[in-house]
Length: 106
Image 1 (cartoon, one colour):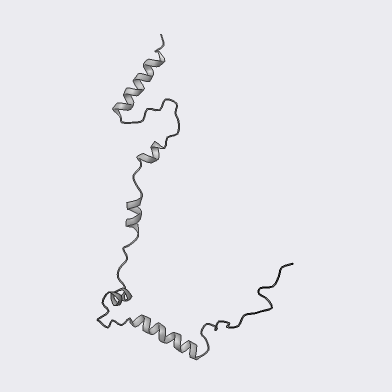
Image 2 (tube, one colour):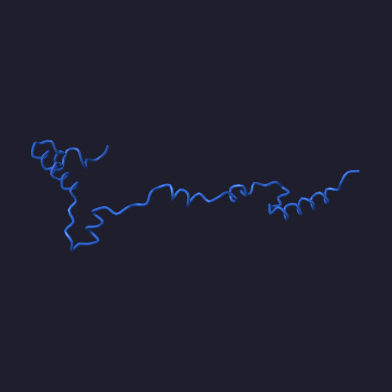
């Protein structure tokens, strides 16, 4: 003798209540598997190291003190040296090219 379908469904409902799962007799996709997973946000945030204060931040926070960034000074000095030798970036064009810009399209 076969067990009636209503009795099996009642058993499944009770099983879901006991094991704290979702009763889904139509087997619709509800996303419960993903919702049960651990959240990824805290682990992703902990992966990247915290941002530490730079010399520029310290100079901005304490304007009364004279804080010197030696690396930045060296970089600026090297830029001046390369500009004086003609090796710096090219100067921007100051005049507009009248012929190429603003013409009517046919």
